[in-house]
Length: 219
Image (cartoon, one colour):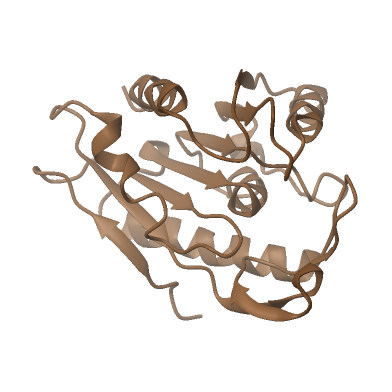
């Protein structure tokens, strides 16, 4: 399987940690590229950022229009009917990127998976089923689409999970963020959950909180 193309941002000194960050539906790997300098990570924490591009897929809820998508969304009701086969395939492609970072000398315990919206749903599946311990999972304005089928690997049963959501999100209602928290707690995880007065987007306060969390899990 050919690795996903994407954007890579190298730190000023050799990287000893990596963040693989997945964009949302219809975007691409450049979407969160401007966030990196805003995080203001210290020079003592040299992190490589990888922003993969999703493949081009027809999306049913958008009339079959072909666009960057990690998987097809078949119905837009609250719990969303999605193509789980495509979602799992995307998760495998993200795990392939994790493997590549390990091959490049990054310890798996210093690799973070992050995802916004659709990318976050893939992030849940990719991180929690990965067979080596990771540093953390960052879920932004997203939902957990594979709660009924995910095979959580014992290596990541203690994975730190940070979930952020907007209280005015009219694309992915905050109710779905809270539902993810409930599922994770039922599975024995201790996710952190924080909301911001925003819609389906990212705000500066959230970026600052993300920076603090990254420094904590990559300390």
